[in-house]
View 1 (cartoon, chains in turn red, cyan):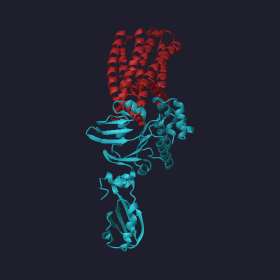
View 2 (cartoon, helix red, strand yellow):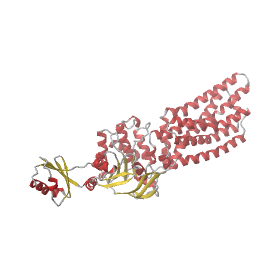
View 3 (cartoon, rainbow over the protein chains, first blue to last red):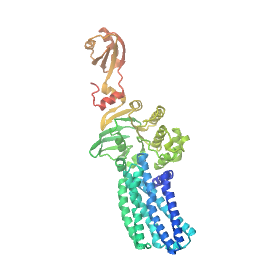
View 4 (cartoon, rainbow over the protein chains, first blue to last red):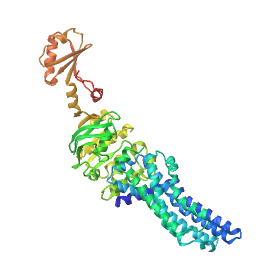
Length: 238
Length: 305
């Protein structure tokens, strides 16, 4: 546990010194919050009271995408960065266990992704309330809250699992980033479903997606843990 | 400190290490020499409990490989071929991170001690990526020593260093030897190995020879005396009929005489040559470098021939 904490703090300290990571973790959510509030303002300007509610609904979907996008940057640089700096072998020569190493790398990406997503969501609600008023907030239902608070950790975990698998085979960050991008697909599913139905989310859909994500996460994490064995890292990773 | 029996590692069909037998006692500096791709790094990785052998066994720092790998990793320090430092973290943060992964008491104090020892204290807050190559190598060695390991595996510790930095590293190895640490040194620098190592092992997939550098040279080449003659003195090598002379070769105006004990037998040799009419200019022992030994063994030449 102590070593896991040490690794986590090292990962975050390193990430904070990486401009690409800081951009992905801080600036992108701020940009999305800003653009969402602006779109709701435009909707309100049309004069139709439902327009701002539709824009609000659409904006909420960003908070199902963010938990898949934010960990990409951290996880890619965390693993490919170790390869590029040839730091993996000294790290593996310490008494850290394979599981601690895997969890350290995974949680270093999942925790900020979930926390930043929830903070961004809070900021979005506050900004909407201040700039536009209370009307759009009527669209914020229990299924939406369940989506954003319940699905985000699973979406982040899935994204990190995919990124870890891809990064173990990639030799540069750009390639890892490109190949890991499909990890955002589960975050797009609700966006597509909700948009096509032109309706509010319903709880059954949230539960169904949650169940699918649990299975996907279990498979992806099982594969990632297999890849994260000392022997594999030293002899197979390129 | 390190005992290996039949240690073997295969990667698919490729045999990287073939039946390595090794016994390195506490406090010894053991030089592990061999060409690139000989399997030296694989051997270090096996002995440092990083990868498993395909077959064979080893006891490292009192623990059996495969049964107590974590304990082995606690007790050994590894300097990898490249320094492997987190470039964005400061020199101090790099060391602190590793110190906290080991059971090091008072990590801050230990880190300060090693930063001062390697004269990096004044640069402690600079990112490791901004340090010179020599400084990065010193930082990597400090990292390998932080937890006071009983065995230190050093893979090319002076590669790419300027002479001054290389000397600092060599002095450090000497200092560690006096502290009873066991050092397993992989190097291509044969002069360094000759000077630093108590024993060396010449390795290419399997161990070709093991021993103290001087003993290996003696074993491989015997001891030979070179007699420099003032004039050619033709036929004198055939006339040299002393019982302790095992072989005589001529090279221009020099005779290369193989003897069992030159210290005792040289006076009689010179006396006999003078009796045979030779004009002896001077006599010296034929020096064989570790490089000669290395090249002969690696190329599979019979050195005595």
